[in-house]
Image 1 (cartoon, rainbow, N blue to C red):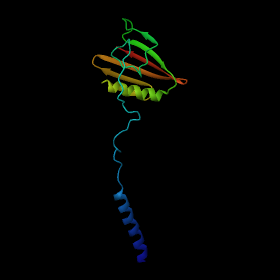
Image 2: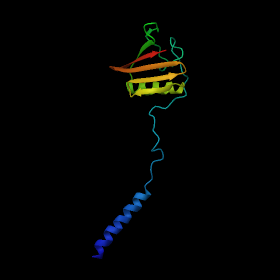
Image 3: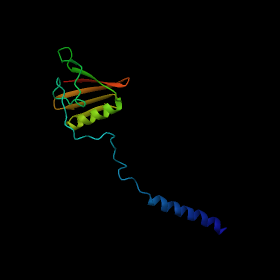
Image 4: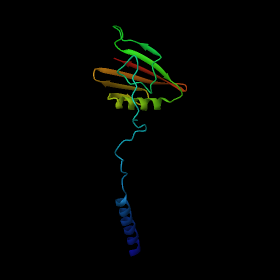
Length: 137
């Protein structure tokens, strides 16, 4: 009868020692980014001189702000990439340049501001390419 009492006690004590000895990962509470902010020089667009360009790519279409449209619109196509990569890279470029991300919808849009400027960026997958549309003032 004593054997039946000792076996659960030994198992219980063993479990306690194992559970108490488990260590939490060092950075378990810190979120990680998949794309690090690089030390590359930031290149700005030619039309919107205050806005960083995505990897130096200049817009293929541009519509200036007017009385009817308060925001300037620029559009470019980035060849052979994914919307996830463009979203993460451009978000990091904006942060590195001092922009504040006010809202971000994973892999589709980024809303940012810096000083008196605002930028609404839409990332859109198109086959093997990505269309990057920026509305800004």
